[in-house]
Image (cartoon, rainbow, N blue to C red; front, side, top):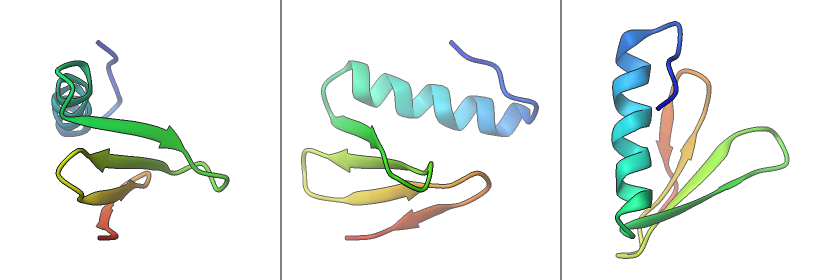
Length: 56
């Protein structure tokens, strides 16, 4: 478990980590430093420093 300066960000990132550990999603680092989160159901999100953008 990683702690961030923002307690809300810590909760969200730990929740996302649980989805990855439980096999519901995969993640990877993009060239610009953002994280791409891909759910096995097909949704794709880009996790930025302060926002989450749904790509598809």
